[in-house]
Length: 334
Image 1 (cartoon, one colour):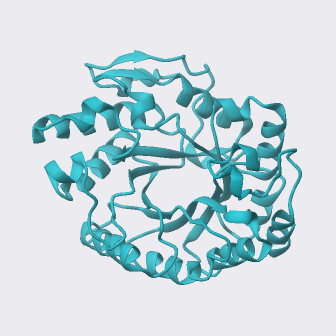
Image 2 (cartoon, rainbow, N blue to C red; image 1 turned 180 degrees about the horizontal axis):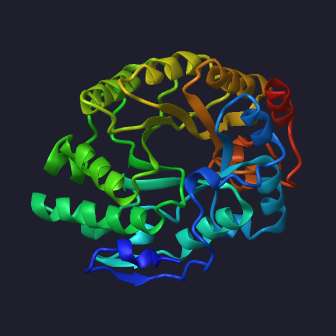
Image 3 (cartoon, rainbow, N blue to C red; image 1 turned 45 degrees about the vertical axis):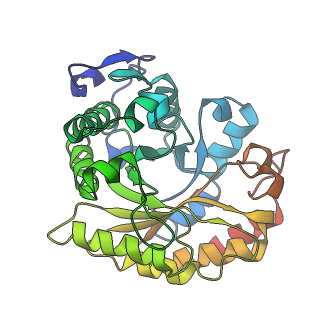
């Protein structure tokens, strides 16, 4: 097997567990053993996958793993691929958690929706403190070359840029936009394309839950970036909703899908306060109504593991038993 380290930048010091010595699967063959629940039903409608968020602390739990492999066809790393977890110091990479997730997915024949490369949050102090454009450009390129390059051919897609917009559709102030303007988007996507030419490259954001100013601002940016071809393959809408908040999702997905040269739209971090069956079915139907909406990822398996645990927002309860919303979603997909 060709060493994963050949894609690394020369200055990087890798502190990670070795990847298993299995043959590297082609991206098109990563779903050899599809899930038998929601994912299978969604695939039967010609879509890509239904996934969940996970990391080693989750899938190491036998019940969590059993439900994950029964119901889902993809995992998104909850934290293990973010910048603070992967490069806490300049050129020093800690990839054991990300390795574990990719190995888990590869072993079990499910996909990886990789998350995330450039984000203003969970960012090491050394990055947020950069004041020189050239230094920041190099940091972005080296980070993406190392992290995305390590998993080239092992993931289906990457969230390359995450949460770059304010609610009014303007660009969020961050070390990236403050020093580089919106050119950091082109820079990041170019680096990701070079590191993993086969992966689908996404821009991802939250509160894109209606055809609002934020969604329109994102679409305008994608139209500009993709004006002369495909730079950004897909748009991810996180879809963290409150109870009764699903009414605008269909219009939002249609708007996002209209962006120039976009191949896919994805619901990337779905959870809904109180997990109402009507809310969940509205979101699933909104995705099914748009052919470019190819995947739905739930942000976790069971309620106690959610970042919104007190709102019981997921499809499975504390005992991994399916809830009414699960039954309603399965009915819609069937």
